[in-house]
Amino acid sequence: MSLNPVKLSVVIITLNEEKNIARCLDAAWQVADEIVVVDSFSTDRTKVICLEKGAVFVEHKFAGHIQQKNFAITQAKYDYVLSVDADEVLSNELISSIKEVKQKPTYNAYTINRMSFYVDRFIKHGHWFPDRKIRLFKKNVGKWGGVNPHDLFELNVGGNPPMLQGVLFHYTFNSIFEHIRQVNNFSEIGASQLQDQLNFFLIVKAVISPVWGFLYGYILKLGFLDGWHGLIIAVLSSTETFLKYAKAIVKIKSTNAANSSCDVIHVSSMRIWRGGEQQVANLLLGQQKQGLKVFMIVRKSSSLLQFCVSNNIPYLAIKFNNGFNIFSAFKIKKLSKRLQAKVIHMHCSPSHTLTVFSKLLGNPAKLVLSRRVIFPVRSNVLSYKKFNYSGISKIICVSESTKKVMAQTVEAVEKLDIIYDGININKFKQVHAPNLKRELGIEGKKIVGNISAIVAEKDYFTFVDIAEIVLSKMPDVHFLIIGAGAECEPIKNYIATKELGANITMLGFRKDVPKLLSIFDVFLMTSTMEGLGSTILDAFASKVPVVATNVGGIPEIVINENTGLLSSPKDAESLSNNVIRLLIDEPLSRQITKKALHLVESKFSMDTMVKLTNEVYKTI
Picture 1 (cartoon, rainbow, N blue to C red):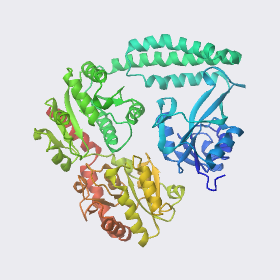
Picture 2: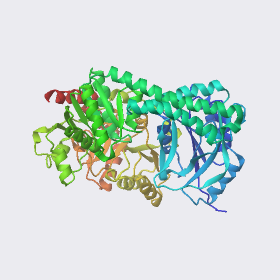
Picture 3: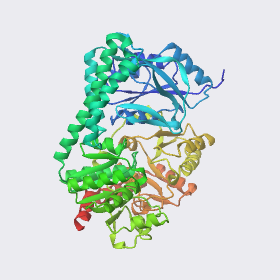
Picture 4: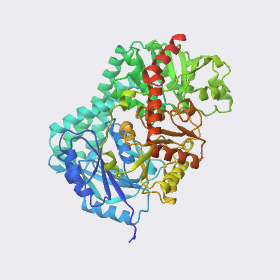
C-alpha cells in the first residue's frame, strides 16, 4: 500500500438537486479529498445541503452540459478528478476500486459502468446497460466533448482505459411523466446543435434514426428483457431522437424566414473563450444594440456557439479544418448570398482562410479582417497571399504596434486601421465579493494576480519569479493565476520546485472576472508579446493598479508612472519592485487607478469600439 495515496477531487454539476445531492455527496466523500459542486443558481435547498456536507460550492452560469463539466474540472484542486452527476451514487464495490486506484494509480483514466434505476427497478439491458463511461481521470489527459446534452469525456490520445469493478448507480426518473419532460428538454437542446445541417438530411434522419434506434435498443440490445420498462425506454428514446430532428427542421425554417437579410456576418473558428472571443461578443452585442442585423458563423461545440444560443444571436456552426474545408466555404458563400450580407468580418486565422476561400467561390460580400495578435505573419506564400488578397477591404489592428507588424506584410497599408478593444465598463462597477477571499482561503492577504491564458507568451515563469522576490520581503501577499492553457502543468511544476504552492493559487479558467478583480490589490502582466492586453482594461475599470511589461501594444494603454508601472520583459527584479511600490504606496495607487479609469472610460469603451467598427463598414 502506498504511503502517499494520490489526492482526488470529485466534481458535480447541479441545478435544483435537493432530492438527490445528499446521497451523492455521502457516497462521494468515502473516496474524495475534496468535493466541488458547480451550480447553475439553484432556487431550492441544493446550496444549503452542499455546504452542510462540506462541499466547495461554486455558482456558474450554465452554458451547456459540456461547457459546465469542463468548467467544473478547472475548479478541482487535485490532478485526479472523479466526475459524477447529482443523481448518481457510488456502489460499495466501486468505492473500494477507487480507493485502490488512489493507492497506486497505474493509468491516467478509468472507465466506470453505470446502472440506471428507472421508476421502480434497475435496468439491465437495452441502450441503458452496460453504460460504460470515462469518469475518473487526470485533468490534463482530455476534456468533455460530444454533443449537448449528451456529453462524453474525450482523451487527448486514444486508448481504452481499464474498467473499474463495481457500478455507478444512476437514479433517473421517479415517473414516466418526468421522463417525458426530459425528452422534450433534451430534444430542444439537441435541435440547437443541428442548425448547420441541410433540411434534406434532417428529414431523412428524422425518419430513419428513430426506427433504427428503437430496433437496436429494444431487439438487438435485448431491451425487451426489461419488460414493460424496457419498452417505455425504447419508445421514449426514439421519440427524443425524432423530436430533435423535427425541432431542428422547424428552427432552421423559422431562422431562415426571420433572417432574410443582415448587415454583417462575423466569423470565428475559436473553440475556447479567451480575450479575443470576449471582444467578438462585445462587438456582437454592441452592434445589436445599435440596430445592426448581425449573424455569427462559429465552430461546432465552441464557447462562442453557446454565447450565441444564450443571447439569441442567429448563428451557423460549421467545421473549419484550419480553413481548408470546401463544404464549409460553400456554406459561407450560400449563407452570405441568402442573407444578402453587406460585410463579412473575420476574427482569426482559420476564419480568414475559409472566408477568402468562399470569396473565390463567388461570395459577394465585402471582407473585413481583425488582427488582435502581434505575431508576425508566417513567411510562406499562402500567408502572404491571404493577407494581401484584393478582396479584403480593411484590416482592423488592435493597436499601433500590431499595425506596424502588419505593415511589414500588407502592401496596401492604407487598408490598415487601428481600433482598440472595448470593454463593458458597467460590468465592473459596484462589484463586491466580501466572502471570496474566505472561500479561497486567503483572508487577510494582499492579492497580486493575472487573468490570461496560460501560454508561453504570457511568461508565467517570470510571474512566479516575481512572487518569490515579493514574498521574501512581504510575506502577507498571495498570488493568483487565473486562466487555462498549454503551460498549466509546467507552471504548476515550477511553483512546486520553488515551494510556493501555499502562496500561489492557480484557479483555472473563470468567467467571474469582475468578482475576482474586486479582491486584487495589484494586477501583474508579465507578457513577452501582446497585441494590446484587454484584461488590463478590465483592471483599469475595476480600479486595480497595473504593473506590466513594455511589449507590443501594452505601452499604448499602460503609460508608465501615469496609468500604471512598466518594466522590461523577464526583468523580475524591476517588476517585483513595481509591485511592492503599489502595495505600499497607497497615494500612488489611488493616483494611478484614477487616471487609468479615466482613460478606459474615454477611449476604450465597448460603445467606442462598436462605433468605430461600424464606421469602417461604411467606408467600404
